[in-house]
Image 1 (tube, rainbow, N blue to C red):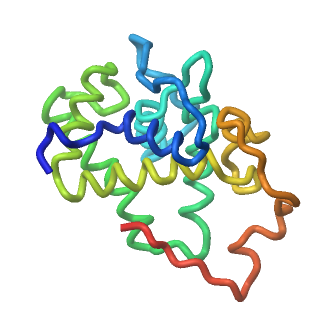
Image 2 (tube, one colour):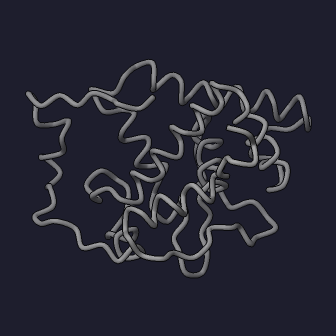
Length: 193
């Protein structure tokens, strides 16, 4: 596959959301000149992960963004679930180090200190390596899950993603004590590549 045949991240998110909801969606192209705010009082790696999520899935006037769907809270919930693959957990966290090392090498700043154009260049560079592409794929997978998940898993608060996609969820939704990883005998195995 050559570079001309590859989808960019925003196109991928657009196509995936469209297929999932079978409903035409607005463009996810970012219109802001300033980077989106990251939540206050976060420590690394979460500050950088939140900034990456905001860059990959920015809010627009007619669509929620990563912070609106609580993508970071969802990711933190899921990678702290007792059945998450330890290697996946560490891989996600270690990706922040690689990202910041590249940002420092190229711009003498951390990723969160960069403007949107520089962030885009760093992410484009990261995606050219196998590990970088896998890391971004995991971040995107968790973003999509946060958009579509039941709010009991700390993403999609009040069904904001469902409303945006015009999706009617199944009922009943699980209560807090019935989250899949609290059910005991049922084991979930990560199928992410």
